[in-house]
Amino acid sequence: MLRLLLDEHISHVIADTLARRRPEISITTVQQWRGGQLSGMPDDVVLLAAAEDRLTLVSSDVNTIPAIVREMGALGQAHAGVILVRRDLTHTNNFGRLVRALELFWDQECHADWTERIDFLRVPSHY
Image (cartoon, rainbow, N blue to C red; front, top):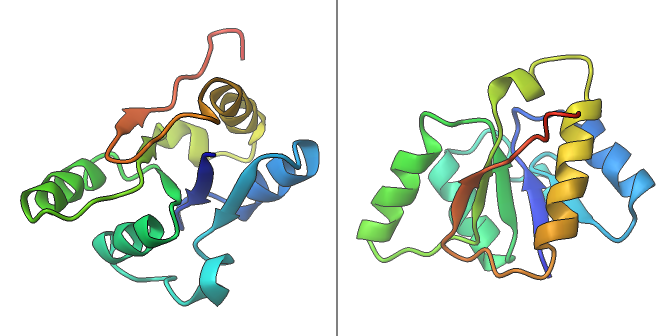
């Protein structure tokens, strides 16, 4: 079952809202997970720890995460998946589009194995 971890650049409001609206969605933030021990840590450290806990990272770091994933692969290090989110969805006070996009994503992918997968979150045009 897919379990989501929001990186530090995505508001905890997203996780809180999703957990309230859809309790079946397993979602947490880097700040909440493991008592916040990985807050402020480099992305590769977060990705490796997330893999240990089978958490798929949701991140808006579209410029750095793909390169880190490639480097990890070259070193034989696995990750539990990455869902990239356009920055315009995370840098706004209107979180509704991102919440709805993650709900739709969950409905389509909740049983999929995201190990070693990386993709962009799709936002339907009607949102």
